[in-house]
Image 1 (cartoon, rainbow, N blue to C red):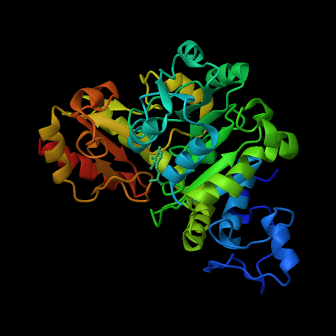
Image 2 (image 1 turned 90 degrees about the vertical axis):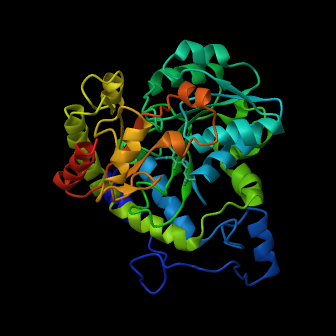
Image 3 (image 1 turned 60 degrees about the horizontal axis):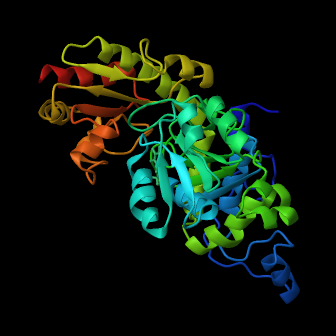
Length: 410
Ligand SMILES: *Cc1c(COP(=O)(O)O)cnc(C)c1O
């Protein structure tokens, strides 16, 4: 198999672009014409691979999907409008009223809100456990559990679960294991090798590079036997391993309508080509910045899984060979100090995104988690004293200069 960077640039080496175009053009159209009525019938019946309508499939989106499939070694990938669309489509497809999913409170804020605020009224039970305790995960699973969901590094708690241990539990119970791998991407963490069945990504982050647009990807790693899932048992008899992807493409993803726009797919594909270079730089910068902050006056604590002394250092080292990504958090004296620090920065941008080329800072307590009560935030490990830094790919000396300016103001 070719290396990661080669696959990110060349995909599956197909050359179906017309006119010899070296880059897949943007097919910025909604509908596709067929020569005969029979042809469009076959396409609708799924018997002939052909595009009909861009909400369901589109050549530019398909090329991005193929690249993601080739990169991960998954069975199939579906490009969607955003990371949240990847998560919501997947849970819509897997769970039903009266069923449950097992997850942790250490979750991206909007994911937690999707589960508890949006889907709970539709009858989904959300069982919270600690993903660092596989026995607790096992106790929460029952015959109505449709998925176990976790993040490869949680945002913003930066907690790392032992994926192989959780996977051993889900395999024993025949429940699909879902992982949001946004903060690491397939470059830093091969979820298929770690026993994850479905990988979910916000491609808005590292993949797009420079936060050019929103996007998301659902990857079926092809490791789950869909005959074991009550919702897919019948279709799996006909479609085998493609049962879940077909259910998305021909039903849930089609009906929800959160498709990836061709223009955004183009930008995501372009970003993907340089992603491994950017991630290497971002990880190297983050390690330097974490070490600086850990020794800086005024900084109470620094959290980064690769940092010596982190409770997750050993598991992170075992799982993520090349690095732990570009997000770290640190605590100052109080919220007032956090705001004063942020407001004195000149290079680092006050913005909520992560894994941009630019270094970004945010105070999660007052922004991303604003919808939760103080006790709920504290239970989620979101403290008023905590700042989240997403380290970009600038020269690290300049990032540190700026942070130093902020600390001097305290
Ligand atoms: C940003 C993010 C999401 C949501 O992705 P969008 O593309 O903004 O919808 C989900 N999970 C994690 C870990 C994220 O950082």
